[in-house]
Image (cartoon, rainbow, N blue to C red; front, side, top):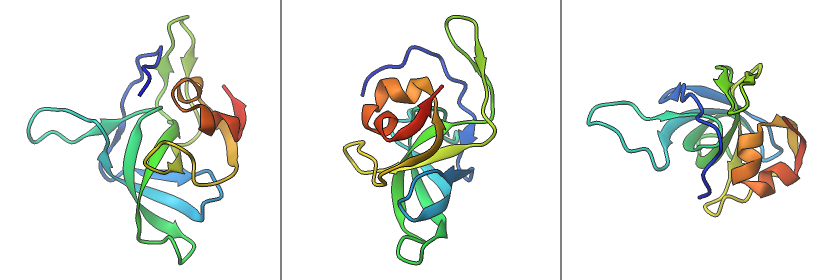
Length: 132
């Protein structure tokens, strides 16, 4: 996985709820794990913009509700600082459901995507309405 140019503040922990902003059928996701997180024993994994999280579908179509999926965090409420000094914060915590290769399951993304996600996951940025 490609490195991102910004040090993102990791604020999403286990049990955090994310809005699913694609047309995969899921509406609300609950974080149950973080892919690639290495921490001290007993510490809860944390995730931020551009990270892959393992989620359970809480709300959505009956076909996908209750399933375990992988998702990429595309927005977070907590502000973080870019290298040029700009601070970025979004209105909500949002994610896009992806498969094991990082390709999005849905065909469109509602809302904007952070630039850090576009650097790491080009396929997600390609179907997004905008990149901030």
